[in-house]
Structures are given as structure tokens and as C-alpha cells.
Image (cartoon, rainbow, N blue to C red; front, side, top):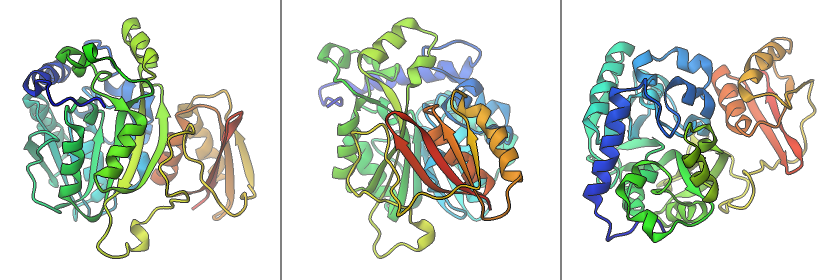
Length: 368
């Protein structure tokens, strides 16, 4: 277990504030973790979505994944972004929920709160509100939000059980969670855990992947799904960081979960969960279905990055008629998130995903 009660939380929080104050004030610098627009592209943000955001919101981005691949936010929702940073995810959430919804940004770093305020002004949004605080004690009433999103933040929190308990508390019954975070495949040593500076560098604050999922379950969440993993630290400019991350099998993950509803959820707020058990063994969950869809066209994207597939999928979809199916084959690990996100943004339906250890992933998209 990574959180340790005897650790001085004030020292850890101070180290985290110092690190992300620097990221906010000096986005042009290189850090041991990817930042800015290049980091957004690397972890899977679609170019069309980034184009709708002001540069000030993206330049200090320090997230570790693309949590919106979870597809849990709907128009009219109230969304809480824990660790909103410079505002990349917060503004995307605000745009998604529309004028009838609300996006709340929570951050404990004053420089980031100043920066996200500039981002909100630049984007011209009126449905965004900011709060100062941290995940261990969220300054919101019980059952006050529909969705909680967080990206690269909970690994920095010393008491993760307290954070998950707070997330559960502020969610309405039937509320949803989308998380991008760092998880480990190997445990850390006690010496590492006691170093506040190392906590701020993302790896040391992380917990084992299976323990992470178990904590969510023990905090009262259901429908827990691990949607994908990414070798996030392979993009670090620091050889030492890459080596440490590799030694502990550190990687970013995208997870979605739900707070049990008071009654049955309406269909619009449900998502398929073919296997109710938490999936911690395979590279990512495999969608199960009665039969494999028959494609009307096939796009072989093996050997290509997920980013280069987007314009090709767009061209292939244009050639199909409404209701026809495009099969996309890809071996880029980020495609598991990127293809799903692209289909959601463009209005097409991802009807099935087939993953096998020795073969490329097959995505079946139905044209809108």
C-alpha cells in the first residue's frame, strides 16, 4: 500500500505545490514528465478537441491519460475535476455539459488556479467554477455532482482511501467517475515512500494497480472497468525517470466506475459491463458480444500511430452509408482509447472491440 499515515502530508503537499507552480509559471521548460500540447497528443487527446481550447489551457497540461475515453459525461451534468490544473480537462468537461450543466475545478496550487481562471476567460465559458482544496477533503456538499474526473492527480494524494471516500460522498447516487492516473506493477520500497520530492514526481505516490482497483471497490464503487494502459513515462526526457518507471512497471491507466444508484439508471447513463469482476490480469478488458460484426470496409492501421489513423478513419467513414460498419485494425496501444474517443466525438458508434495477445486490436465502428 502506498499511502502511509506516518508520512508528513504537509511536506508532500508542499513539494507537489512547488512542482506544479513551476509547471504553471514556466510551461516552456522541460520536466521529467510530458507536459503541454505534445503530452495531450501523446496520451490520446483528439486534435479536433484540442483545437477548441485556448493555448493557455493546454500549455501547462500535466495529465497522464485521456479520461474522456470513458464516455461518462452527458449534457446537463455537474462535473467536478479534481486537480484541474491549467484547465484542459475542465474546459472539455464544461463544453461537454453545455449551458445546462456546470464544471467545477478543484486545485490546491494557487498558480494553477490563476492560470485556469485565464483559461476560462479565454474560452468565454460561464458554466465553470473554481475551488481551492485537495482530494482528501473536497469542499462540496454530499451528493452534489454527477461526475468526478481526475487526471494524473490521485497518485499524488497521500491518503488515497480518504480521497476515494470523498469522491463517493460528493457523487449523487448513480454518479460516475472517470480517472486517468499512474499505477504500478511492482511495489515501492519504504525509503522511496518517505521522500516528499519523489512523491511530486508522480511515480512514488502511485499504488499497485490491483490495490488501486480494490480501493475503489471497497470505497463503494461498482461497474469498475480498467479501459486501457499506456507506457506514459517512455515519453519522459529523463533517462533516470524512464529507468525508475520501468523498474516498477509504472504506467498510466484509464478507469471508470459508478456510485450505485438509488434505483435503476436510465439507459442513457448505463454502459456495457459484460464482466462485473474487476479486470486486472489482461492488458485491457475485452468486450464480449454474441457474434463478431461483419464489416463493410476494413482499415489496416498496423504499424501506424493512433494519431495517423484519425484522418484515415474519417475518409473511410465518408465512403460508407449510414449503419454500415468499418473495421479498424491497430497495434498501437493508445488506439484502445483514441479510437473510442474519436468515435464518440464524431457521433459514430463503437459496437465491438476484439483484443488478442498476438494479434492487432480490432475495432468495429458503425457509421452514424
